[in-house]
Image (cartoon, rainbow, N blue to C red; front, top):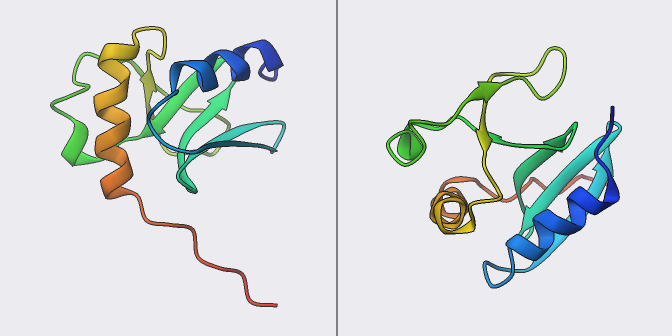
Length: 104
């Protein structure tokens, strides 16, 4: 089951004020970019973020899961609790690099 557009709209509304939000449908689900960095992978109406050691203390009680078959394990971000999710996303913004430019 893919994400609903209502869920993607909800994520974007929760992220107001964090940065410039852009969404891109890919692989049947969605990538949410903040300030052009791929931060949230939305699959089956669940938000996933990379499991990085620098955020493990901030998100230690979070469930984990696999966004799609063959993916690495990710934290499941509870986007409904904006006050808890925003600091995690801000930390990820400092850790995740910009995507590499594709050569033409």
